[in-house]
Length: 296
Image (spheres, rainbow, N blue to C red):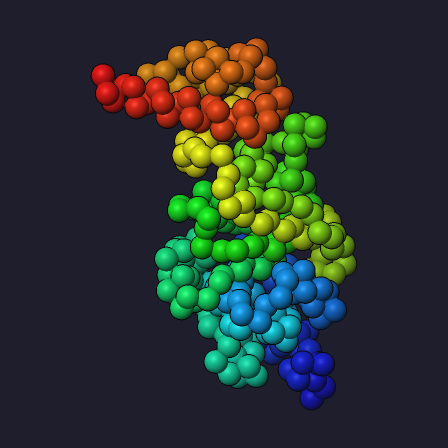
């Protein structure tokens, strides 16, 4: 049997032997190019003292690269039972350095990962399944307390999602809730693109690797309230704030126009014209009015 440079069988052989054809229902697109997976692992930074959390490893191409590039340990979260034998082979190649959680990543708590890391820094590096990528990222960005349980995110998304993560009001078409959350709590940037031909099966779109480094002290506000404010504002992005924020304000007994003015914003502006600092002020104004209402 032919072996790859890391001493394990080529990924295509592993996939064929394990019956691991990619499933659309699981958002799977596998990376077979070890040069590319190595590039992603290097982009995640020095790994010697880091526990890397990987979501959706599949046959383990990126897992192998992370271990080969010195990750202290890798915690791989994989819900597809067909991939477990392939991951077990990788674990045998690097004894004691790979732990597999056979579960849905959406169900794995930060507390569980912190406990498994045993005090080592956690870094998340993954070719995220397309169908849950943005939900996972939003959850990590809303994590409490902050600074979060991870020191960096190096994640692959469809390029259109990557653009939405790093957008500012200057890129109105892409700017939305995800960009506000990412811009508020992290320094986010696109590192490089990955063509469809690099995947099996090839997706119809280009993918991008995004780095998000947590800001140690973002402007204080409640993360879930900020998320709710932005969701309402961008949910009706063609409308002025005094109209679009009614979906957020009315159930809380608040006046949308007064809330916007309290944040120092023009009620006739639209969500795509408001920067991250403006949305933070909106969330803080809502929190102050909620507190006033409870005090009364």
